[in-house]
Image (cartoon, rainbow, N blue to C red):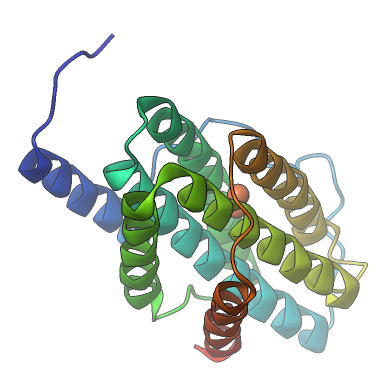
Length: 214
Ligand SMILES: [Fe+2]
Ligand SMILES: [Fe+2]
């Protein structure tokens, strides 16, 4: 077990490394298999494929943001228990990130060009939430996961039923995000004030609308 105590500077350097790995490298995952392995690859029309690419690009950008959010919180959360939980959840978000990237590659799409921006913004929000206090930080996680599940529901209602492989990824992500939200609430997450929830919704709208195109 690694018992080394890192200084703030050490941790900032480690975080910069994680940021680069998330946006342009191969992030560490839980090594779960992609949920689509046994499914048939149906031929999609050009329109279906274009839609799948755009929606999977949004989901990939969302996972970059989720990763940054958890890393930001892990940096500033005061309780070691909360910090450890954030780091485990971040690994699961990396599974999602890698699955979305692989699916995008297969479909011939590219990831969002604004990923570095999403990472930076979400990291700062996570770090601020972690600094304010663990119950707010956990409440922030719970609300984020709730909004992600809403997006996934919209995508599952929109994406072609013939794109079984993308759907399998989204369905597994939905299960995981629901669990992440419940974990955060059970760990003592507070309900956020309504204006904060609205602001988060607005920011996520900006990200999803932009990532749809670029
Ligand atoms: Fe995720
Ligand atoms: Fe999650």
